[in-house]
Length: 415
Image (cartoon, rainbow, N blue to C red; front, side):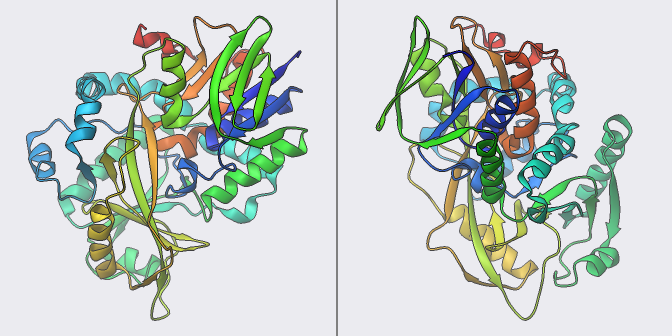
């Protein structure tokens, strides 16, 4: 079984890891219950967010908390059962979101984000997926001038420190760039060195095809149990057993299930999101994804139509869908852009895997030889998949990693 590897999880992160390992000559099998890119990586806004050098903190100011409390907002909703189930991780998230601790997280987080487009570029070329990717950037639109001014100040800071590029658009410039938008927005920030994707699931599939062209194998099977043996790892699936010398756990929000069976306690919690595709009426168009910042939703032009994505819902993985958040977003979005009929039979739902210190886990499991971990990317798994793939492949191959990896070790949770 020399250099044989199983990768459990075929989202953007797992698929990227499998690709980078196969490039290094490993015999790799990528395993998921669904085809590559059909879970969480399918339903995002399709943005490779080069500007997102600051992770999302938990709100700590009283006005924001009071605004969220009635549980009718578009950007954030919660269910009592979900809040109770994740009470410990959420309290830790709140503690890590003080200005001082958040600032400490930005440095390692940005070390990943600043490499996102160059690492995607490697895989886009290998996959021949250029037709799916636009390099025209995306928009943050604002209804309030004070909100826009605060974002401009932040943009100036991250431009100086991290090479983010942007343009400030007043209402007239925004109208010139996006003539089909109604006049509700006072202006926008155009993030110009971020990239956008017209079919996020399709991009992951293209990366998986590139992985298979290197000799990798994709297995669609429901994983049931993992166990360590004298010669490596055995993965029990509904379709039989798979064995390899090493196992990579990249199962996103489901990673906790497998970790708990192996005795690791990690404060992973989900943030759910919803999306729906729409036709567009009256010959209108949308040229760039645009986030309605003060309302809390995002519209993106996709192959399947105009995709509307919600903010986050704090709930459990198993909870049944509630579409009120999406319905509320749709009512506001229809006043901004002339959306037509819904194109999907039911709204899509997905769960972002979040950790309270806002950093992913990337590295070796300390108590199990040959077990490697890559999960907890929060809102940015789609953005950070390729850089994670490169870094983990470097670690597994004994190469010097591109960035310092100590902040991403699982040992930081002391369990």
